[in-house]
Image (tube, rainbow, N blue to C red; front, side, top):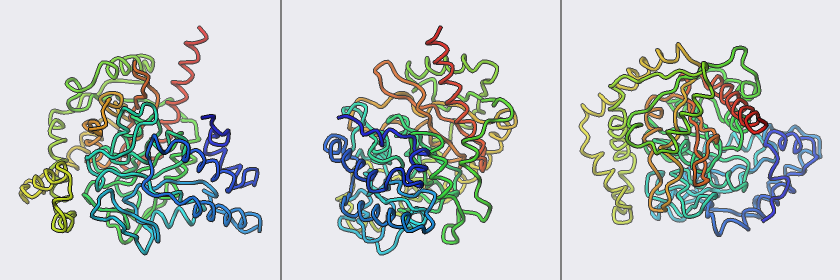
Length: 453
């Protein structure tokens, strides 16, 4: 299928054209709907889509702009929403038959912000069962025999397939960073508590984080800045000024950034040859701008600690689902719930204490670098639809609450994308985005110089 030129526009340029009227919201929405109609039978990224409603939103936005009324910073941009995010009068079924036909009466706080910013709510993207690990129906756009990852599979695949320019997902383990890596798009998991989760399915409140997908760092920064902010109903959020993420993503660092290469726990046992070789080459090209920083041995327990927190809180949050229909839950889900019910209060509270201890150790690394650079996944998307892949390289950063971003900079020998994960200090999302954009340009320039020589 020939790609409509509008769908190939950088999202920042697209936003500017929509704002000026050079491109009408209806025109762009129609292009997205045509793309979805052509690819959805193969990719299966959508849990709910109403084309008439999409066009009604677009016509209303065009009329608003033509009338001279103020328009929002995301005017006319379609956004896909993971189907664990409540949308008023639109199904939100949380990837489980137990919520079949569920239609919320109110929008989640983040959806309210998107509407206020002039975004078009395109529809609901596929989630795995209640944002956990049972594979969904979604396929990887690069090779439909490979997994797109989980649990924000639909959001990542929809952006990768140019069905929408932007999408929103959630991460409790690695559900933004990993599918972004497998599908070859930018995935941003901000600092824990940066974006309100009110109206979003709660799996593990100590870990659940809203994240975004785009095809560029600037696009991710654009939508994330709209979503950042305090919400009195979400105690994880704090009252503080919203960082200027778009400005940071467009700016040039005053000093060339320094990156610390970190081999995450289990790197030597699970990283495949493609990943090892690609990072060896990347760190070599970075030269003096990159140094290796080993993590203390205590970090080896991070995966088990995160799982204790996740499973214990999930057993509490999903108690009503288990009581209503345990027989309709997947084996992966029931095993996790059983594990959560066995976690003692002592072990749960002790696991929570480790987050701050880990961040103290990470602060020593961040005193010597701008960001950490590390793989987003052990390798490219596995060639199976019976798995969502391994989140071992993501869970540590979710546990610590640090911001992380996937950049689609590497390719495996089989032609599938592999993400480079950058991790920033807690609360320093702006620096992370500025360094991410710098790295994209650095790698692009290095590749161009190599090709010319």
